[in-house]
Amino acid sequence: MVREKLITEICKKIISLKLDHPIKVAIDGVTASGKTTFADDIAHALTQMGEEVHRTSLDGFHNYRRIRYQKGRSSPEGYYFDAYNYTAIIEHLLNPLVGKEEFFFRTQVLDLKEDKESLSPKVKISKDGILIVDGSFSLREELFSHWDYTIYLRVEMKCAQKRAGQRDKALFGSNELAEQTTRDRYHAAHRIHNELEKPWEKADIVVDNNEPKKAYLIE
Image 1 (tube, helix red, strand yellow):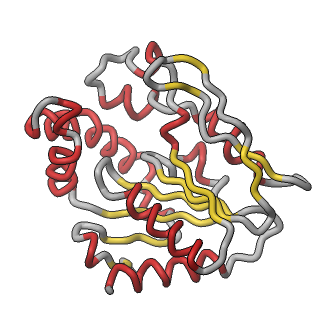
Image 2 (cartoon, helix red, strand yellow):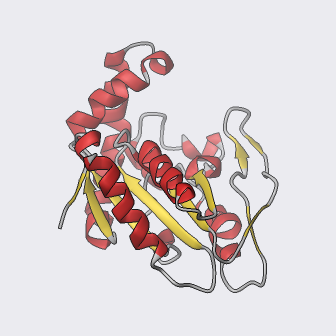
């Protein structure tokens, strides 16, 4: 019930925004902090409240492999500075949702597996629609001013690393390797993000998500 109550409270805050364009909501947090699940829960609750909701992530906006790994496959600097195509995020996902009579957006520009350009079909959203987006580094400077409502999930990195070990075991071959990669590349990149951006200070709300069922707002 604690989580459900929190989700409902957040949804009411989002709905209270009165804008002349779709509401764009961003959810940031370290790798394996629970961003995807949290975003899904908000989207589901808003839908239950009768809102028009669209759901996506930043995963469809990675850079080409040659750019992502130009500093090395294990480089945290490479992950932070080179993983995502922020120009494409703004051009295809965010800018199309302001200053128009009709609103359309795309959710993908790259087929990550094939490493090829792959523009998704345009999706129409009404002026009163809500777009929920989760993604690492979504509150960095390049994107921050484009969001209408921002959420940061606070989770201790050791806790998130254990989650990543369980979640990504099949991908990396073992819990240990999944945890190590998360710690040495992804979370090291988030330390850069934290130092440069301090996303928890910029976010509209900060949620402690160390225990997802008992998640709570940090005042």
